[in-house]
Each structure stands twice: as structure tokens, then as C-alpha cells.
Amino acid sequence: MRKLVCGVISILLSASLIDAQPASALSPAVQAFVSVDAPVFALTHVRVIDGTGAAAVEDQTLVVESGRIKAIGRSTEIKVPETARVLDLKGSTVIPGIVGMHDHIFYPSGGGSAHYNDLAFSAPRLYLAGGVTTIRTTGSLEPYTDLNLKKSIDTGRVPGPKMHVTGPYLEGPGAFTLQMHELTGPEDARRMVEFWADQGVTSFKAYMNITRAELSTAIDAAHKRGFKVTGHLCSIGFRDAAALGIDDLEHGLLVDTEFVTGKKPDVCPPQQEARESIAKLDLESAPVKEMIRDLVEHHVAITSTLPVFEISLPNRPPLDQRVLDAMLPESRIDYLSIRARIGQSPFPGREVAFKKAMQFEHAFVMAGGLLIAGLDPTGYGGVVPGFGDQREIELLVEAGFTPLEAIKIATSNGAQFLGELNHIGTLAAGKQADLVVIQGDPSKNISDIKKVTLVFKDGVGYDSGKLIESVRGMVGLR
Image (tube, rainbow, N blue to C red; front, side, top):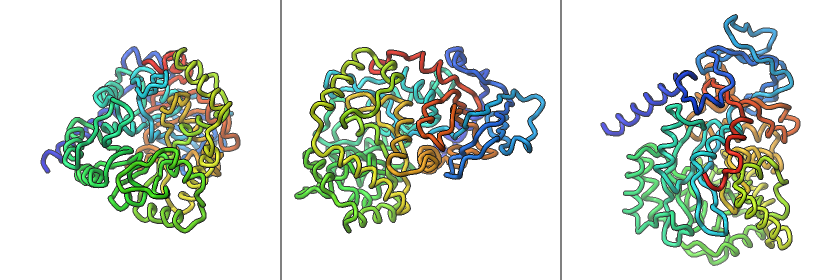
């Protein structure tokens, strides 16, 4: 107990120090991307989308002091301090910083190999440039890299979002990459959770071949530390995972195998069988409705990661030059080659399953479920940090959510799951100044979500364009 209390105090002290950190404490490498570093500044005549789902409000002024929002309201009513730096943002929109809930620091190495390169240099820059001010890594292949990257960002040595580091994957025999440890049983799962909790991770992720006994033990060990467990499952269905106490399920319907005919306990069925079961599934059937109700009653969140599935569909997403320019040339060639093959020979049933996945996420929210959002920069490439988070918001709108609802899912819902809603996730006086300035009005045209110009993290404004340019041609390598 003493160890746990000391750990909590240490975390709180660290968070306090980070929150109070002035822009002048940032290294020259970070300062190069800072365009607004005034202790007091005002964003005037701006449109505000506050992240609560409420309608956009025109002609607003936000006053920020010492890294926090001091005042927000009509420009005719807010008094701007004489010492404030004033930015007239007429025509622009401010939203809360995006909270990316499936935002890895790694990316496929290309060539069809099941290996991933860590992007400790380019990924944090691109997340921040895309308006993502907080991430949960949701599974790590190089946990020490992630932990040390978090430390470097927190101490102002490198640019990037605030990081919630998830431990290494809790995976059983059959891991598809050599970078994963394979559990040998429940006791191994417990040891793994306790070891990495001691190293500084704050959440855990179960993977496709874990057993129910291993998952149950891991959840118990994590919950004793006050940490949450999510899962990209296959060997275990959603309802069984909910009964075991899991807190979150990644990817939604597309990875739930409980509807596969002949599914064996603790065994991951062939992926083709799983895809076919989803394509045939009736979302209005009693078993699906019961599953959704069960998840809601157990307070299990679902993480939407539509971009990583979209790339398996013909000619999707629309080609984005920003994404292609960010890639290592070899990664770009690999991505475009596989994309072309999919366009010529699409996978049977994928489009039907993708639409059902969207419908499921909408139904889950309508039933009272907490939907959070991320991008998952894996697959065969093409889902790039930052840009993919923006695409996720666009796809949520395609799934039936309004632009305001989609922005809420990508901001305040993530903050709520992380227990950070008192500090981030919405725009209100007293909250940390994690803000995204967008040229245009995403409440009317969601594609404007890609037009990020400035990103504020704790009141320090970063130039999105400079961050993107600094990693041109690097995604896939570093």
C-alpha cells in the first residue's frame, strides 16, 4: 500500500510540474516549432466547438494564462488583458485537443513482413501536428522506447503529445510478430503486469491468443494497481471479456468472434471465418442487441479504429498527398502497390463487414455505450499518425454521427475514459489549454478537420506545418 501511495504522489507531482512548465523551459529542438509562447494570449473572433457535443458558437474569444483557459465567451463580452498577445482568428475554428486512444508509436516496416519499426522521431511530431495532444499507446512493441519518449516529451526535450503508455501486448502462443512475448499461463500474465506497472506503464492490452484464465489474472493484477485493461481479442468473445472485467475493447465488431459458428473456448478462429461471420450477421438480431446491452451494463468502452480497416477496401481512403509525402519512399511504394492490388481484386465481404462495423458503433452509442477513437497505424501502411486521427473523425461522420458528435467522441470521450475530463477533452475556463485551431468550419464540413494550423498543448502553440515538414519522407523508418 505504501508503495502504491508513493507512486500516486509521484505521478501527481510530475503532472503538476509538467503543467507548470513554461515555454522557455523547452529545448531548442522543441522551440523551433513553437509559434505562440506568450504567458497570456487571446484567440479572438473564433468559432468554438467545445467538445461536449453542443453546437458551434460564433465570434468567441478565449483568454489563456499560464497554460490554462482563463475565460471563454462572446468577443463583445470578454475583456482581453492589456498584456495579452492577441491572435485574430476570424474564419477559424477552435476545438479541444484530440485524445487518441489507439495511437501506437510503431508502423509496419513494409515488404509484407510482420515486423514494425518504432517511430519515436516522426510519430510524436505528426500526432501533435494533427491536433492530437494526448495519446494512449494501446500496446507497445518497444516499451522502454515509449516510456523514455514520454519522459523526453514531458521534460521538453522533444515535441509530442502527452503520453499514456500501455505495456507490452499480453499475448498467448501464436503471436504474428517476433516482437511479442508469448504468455505461458496466468502466473506469467500476473508477473508481466506487475513488472511493467513498476516500470511506469499505466494500462495494458490483451491480444488475440490470450486465454480466459490469463486475461482474468491480468485484469485482476492491473485493477489492483488502479490501471485499466483493453483488448484486441479473438480467442475470447466480447461478452466473455466483459464478464471477466475488461474495461475496453479495441476495433469494435470487426474483431468479435463470439458469433463464429463452432467457436472453441480460448481458440482464435481463422480470420476468414471471422470476417464471414460478421458479413452475415444481422445487427438487429437478439444476440447482437444482448451483446451491446451487456457491454453497456458492464461499462465496457469500445475503441473505434475505422482507418485501419478502411485501407482493406478498394480505392479507400482517398489518396492524401500529405500522407504520401510523410512516408519513406519504400513505404510509399509498398503501400501504393498493395492498395492497387486490393483495387483489382477486393476481398470478398470486406465492404459489407466495414459498413456493419460502422452501424454497430453507432448502435452502441445510441444504447448508452462509451465510444472512444484512435487510428491504429498498422495494417499494411497508409494509416499515418496524426493524419489517421483526422480520418477517423471523418469516418465517424460517415458512420452516422454528426460532426459535433464525432468531435466529442475524439476528444471528451477519450478524456473521460482516461479519467482526465476535469483537465482536458472540452473547452472551459480552468481547463488546460489543449486547443486545435482549424481553418474552416468542421461542424458543417467535416473534411475541414484536416486544415489544422496551430496546436496548443498546455498553452504553448505549435506550428502544424513546420512539424509535418520536419518529418517528410520518414514514416516507416524513424
